[in-house]
Length: 269
Ligand SMILES: [Zn+2]
Image (cartoon, rainbow, N blue to C red; front, side, top):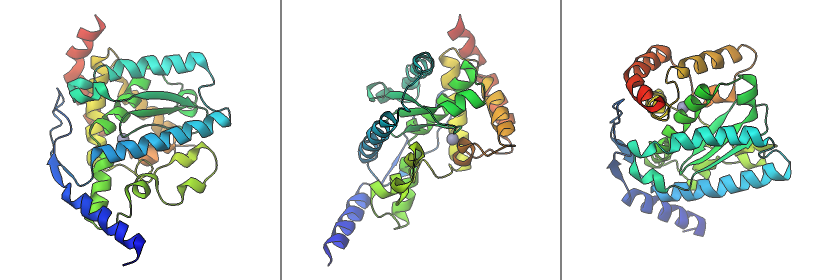
């Protein structure tokens, strides 16, 4: 057997032995309790993400695109840290994650949270949407929830089960994506692919609860998505291409916001 193929076979074998049905998070007030099928270890994904994140930051720094506006960085970190402080409601181990929050200068309307808690917010999101603190909390709550639920790991697991996984690295980052110019190169195969409708619903609901518990108006998720839709009349925000809108989103967000209003009122007292 060719050495490369042997490694491939070993990777697949070790992946398959790791198959398990898990519940990554506790259901919270919004009741997200779907069981998930995982075929890759959580840690491998987080390690690969950490590496990619470090490379991205180094490149952004070199181009002077990293954390250029101190007040803006402080604003984003304050909001993100208040949300992160609430994550143990869904999963207690998240308090030990090595969270990082950075702001990248880019026209893109985008933000993401990698597996393991590495967060990036693009200045295009802040400036083009003239985003309020409550809306920023809605975006970050949504992104953090994707990471808490390990949706990326679930998607890599689907690839592994389908036999189309070459390596976790290539699945996570996307083959060939490193050749692209600019900080957009961080479009990883996993984060750069559209989330499923199911994953979107879960991230929406959990994100709204995180925001409410952190003292941010849970109704802001609705105005956020309205702004996103409006922004897409000129060009489709990158965020929308990876977080597809769904017809019943506004209705669902309104219902969930209603449910967590008491948590918001408690937190803002
Ligand atoms: Zn999403």
